[in-house]
Amino acid sequence: MRAHLGDHLVIESPATGATRRDGEIVGLHHEDGTPPYDVRWSDTDEVTLVFPGPDAHVHHIEHGPPGTTHGAHPPDTAAAPPPDAPPPDAPPPAARTPHRGDIGRRVAVERHRQRLSREETARRARMSSEYLAYLEEQPADPTVATLIRLADALGTTVTALRGGDADLPPGQGRALLRPRLWDLSAGECRTLLATHGVGRIAVSASDGRPAVVPVNYEVVDDAIVFRTAPGSVPATAVGHEVAFEVDHVDEALSRGWSVLAVGTASVVTEPDAVRTLTRRAHTTPWAGGERDLWVSIRPTSLTGRRITPAER
Image (cartoon, rainbow, N blue to C red; front, side, top):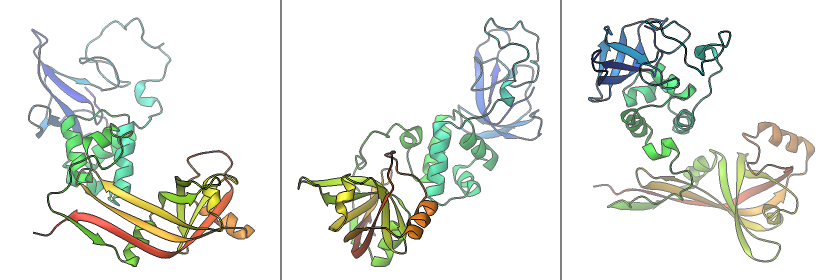
């Protein structure tokens, strides 16, 4: 018997085939994947060291129904290949190029946003760092209990880790019973603004109507810079005093902050400065297309507010 992190260990009655117990393998003790295993049981959420007996088998979440064995190793008992089995010379599942799943990507992004190491996150979620690496790097299907612990460790929700709130506007959670709204200092505003990402610029469009447009931005030498296309709505900011806003909402804890910068927008024309901005940019504009016009806003006013629970 051989297993990988994330496989399920299933123990069932040989006579009836009824499942008696199953759990997720969260720890390996041998590099070749042979027993024993650390198993987190689905019925108790406890982790125990297991030496599988003859009534146990390994089920990998990506391949086949419960009762099948994963990997390039031969099964414990001989069986005829199914009709849709791959040809004999096909690469085994374990040798194929892995692709991270959506849950793993969201876990990794949230962990980096929180500036947490993999080891610290695993400690908070009460799992091994090797298993967390598996979740982040493989198309895993963790149990609900595992997702709950990860969400708690990262200060988010299971729904967010699953991507179920991707199309929902933030702020639908309940308000705090005793919220405190307080002003941020200029230094705190600069720190929050400097994380870069997506912000919103408020301008008067070419037809005179007000508009608020999201843009990917950077902060360079205390100036807010973003790329856009000539003739676009964000480009109308050039030569005018505009407002630029960034915020963050913690849906799980009903907290959040916002920073508002006000200043005059100008075009970055110096070739060396343009090359430097392009080279140092963390990302290209999400909107795509040719967006080579760099616009700079140097704030003359920087204010912000934060919502937290009131001190008892």
